[in-house]
Amino acid sequence: MFIMTESTPNPATMKFLPGQPVLETGTANFPAADTAAKSPLARRLFDLGGVEGVFLGRDFISVTKAEDRDWSLVKPGVLGAIMDHYTSGLSAIETAGTEAVVSADDSELVVQIKELLETRVRPAVAQDGGDIVFQGFENGIVYLHMQGSCSGCPSSTATLKMGIENLLRHYIPEVTEVRAVA
Image (tube, rainbow, N blue to C red):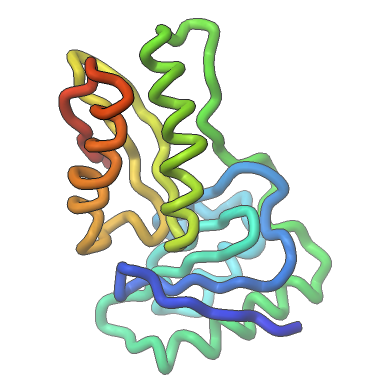
């Protein structure tokens, strides 16, 4: 098995591409070891030590290292853990991931926002090893939760304000601002 790696805009996060599907649909975010109970892969990565976050996408794994650790020391263990996981035959996660789903209760504006996020924003941030999930829309403000390499990234504010906010305001004049939520 050959696993490719890519740096991300977040220097604490690296993207690992195992060359095969990680999740069939959606994404899964594990911001700490105690949240990884349903993912054999995430548990294996947290067990290495020095790993502070794991994010699973359709064809990639983003790993966030501890601030006091160097990638030259963490990366070999992560590569080994990913290889061990795939040879074990276990699935990456025991339940489905999350996706922006349109609800019958959503207003027309919320449906438009979710559609733009799903078709224009999420594919772009997935290339950098992250995800952005819709959390709400109220009084002209779109609330988004940033995951994977997007969480804690130095470029995340610019991505929100210059990228996502401008895109949404262009297509949906009712949107006045975009804010990140934890």
